[in-house]
Image (cartoon, rainbow over all chains, first blue to last red):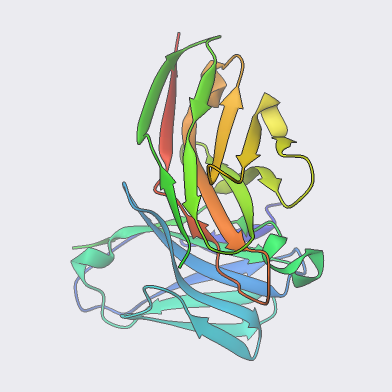
Amino acid sequence: DADVTQTPRNRITKTGKRIMLECSQTKGHDRMYWYRQDPGLGLRLIYYSFDVKDINKGEISDGYSVSRQAQAKFSLSLESAIPNQTALYFCATSDSKRGGTAAEQYFGPGTRLTVT
Amino acid sequence: AQSVTQLDSQVPVFEEAPVELRCNYSSSVSVYLFWYVQYPNQGLQLLLKYLSGSTLVKGINGFEAEFNKSQTSFHLRKPSVHISDTAEYFCAVSYSGGSNYKLTFGKGTLLTVNP
C-alpha cells in the first residue's frame, strides 16, 4: 500500500463549485504540504503544516484553504473553483526528526483537477 | 530569497549516451540541495541530496550530482542513460539554518531518452 495517498486522483468540476482534495499518510510524519504543479512552472507551495495545530500559508495560498484533521490527514479545499486552478496537485510529507529542512519529502501520486 | 534555475526545459538524448541536467541556485546562506524525479503519471521521488561533506553525491539509478559552491551549481549527471530514465527532473533547494521549511523547486527538465 502507498504511504501517501490522495483522493480523488482525477476530478472535473465547474466554475464556482467547492471542492476538497484529501491526503492521507501512513508514514507517521509530522509535516505535511500541498503543492500545485503547472506545466513549465515546477511545483509551488500552497500550504504547509508542521503539526495538527500549526498551519501556514505558502507562496500561492489565495483561493485555497486547508484542514489538518489528524496527524495523518491534510485536506485542501477550493471554496469557489476557477479555471486557472486547473492543475496537478500534490500532497507531501516529511519527518522533522530526520533533519528539519534537510529531510526528504515524500510525495503522493497527485490529483489532476480540471475546472471548466 | 532563494531561487533555482534549471537551464534546460527539455533534454533529448539517445539511449546509452551521457547526460547532464543543469541546475543553478541563488542564496546568500548555506543550503541543502536535492534532485527529484517524476516518472509519467507519478508523484516525485528523491534521486539524491547534498547536505554537507563530499561535493560528489551519488543517488539511485546510477545518477550523481556535484555541488559547486563557487559556481552555485548542482548539476545532475549519468554516464549512460536508459529508455526508463525518461522523466521530468526537478532541482530543489532549502536553507540549512533555522527552521525555514521552504523547499524551492526549479521549473523542471524533461529528459527524453530515444532508442
